[in-house]
Image 1 (cartoon, rainbow, N blue to C red):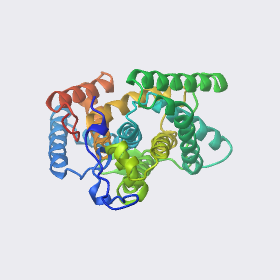
Image 2: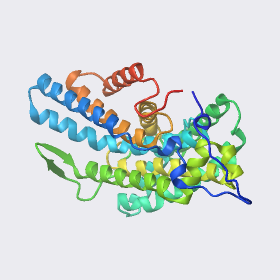
Image 3: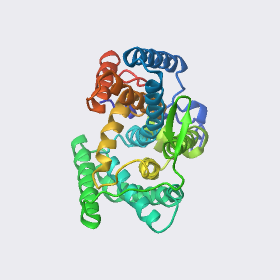
Image 4: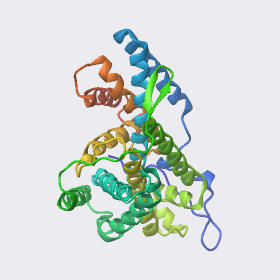
Amino acid sequence: MTSPADQGHVAAGTGGGVATLDPDEVRAPTARAVPWLRIGVIAALVVLAIGLAYVRSGSGVVVVQAVATGVLIGGVYGLIAMGLTLIFGVLDIVNFAHGSFLALALFLTFGLTQAGLHPYLALAASVPAMFLLGVLVQRGVLAGAMGKPLENQLLITLGISLIIENGLLLFFGANPRSVALPGDRGVPIFEAVANLSRILAFVGALILAGLLYLLLQRTRLGTAIRAVAANDTGAQLVGIDTRVIYAVTFALGTACAGAAGTLVAPLVTIEPTTGSLFNIVAFVVVVLGGMGNVVGALVGGLVIGLAEQLGGIYLPGQSPLLSVFIVFVLVLFLRPQGLFGRSA
């Protein structure tokens, strides 16, 4: 696995004092130019897959329903994966606790809805709470593992995941819970029907993903994050406090998991281990899109969402994850660095 720090550099200015960074001159794995041609090729392959699914099923209604559901859930997968890939792109940490943070947000959302708050208004509490938790975890636990062997970081994040899952099990028990969205109903989409909760989760995920992308591309904080992702030593030379950037980046990734947890709360059964399945899918999406690439995570999420649903047409009666991993293996066989990753 090639560290993002090996993929670029940040040049310091030649004048006296601390040099300034030009956002247009920083090119890090988390914010590269959008490869529209590659996206076009992926879109053409998706259209081909949809056409073959229609031939396989013989029913346009079934295919439209699968596509609608796949796109809606794929947007949420993309948001989850964006947080995970952002953490890897800057901190070079593979965060196994990402799904557990999502589960924690699910239970927080459940508690707030039990207190009478609308499920999606819980975002105003879950996102800041998970952001703060991310800062505490990075500064209190992970900071000492920075620069250490990869297995140290993996074991630490795995330990955090086990602590969160078992803590939720201890305090809330194993009984499944659910969150009801007031006024949830079926909404017609062409010949398909999608629950309002799925549509709102998809729209919310796209908005948050867009805000994260704009933060990385158009703000001084985003420029600093991209600079640290490119070369942390070079970033320090131009006056960036990398310790702060590490904490903020991990917190942003954790907040993405928290936001996704709140958005999917009306769609899933809430259990201490619910985040584990999302964790598996998020890792698949991150590797598929290209490690450390935010745009790749969003596109990869949509591809995996469609593969999951169309797989039910191609391989009826099989686990949805079977088609996901078939697509995953095929992509990595043809392009080992992922759809939007760079060759090592």
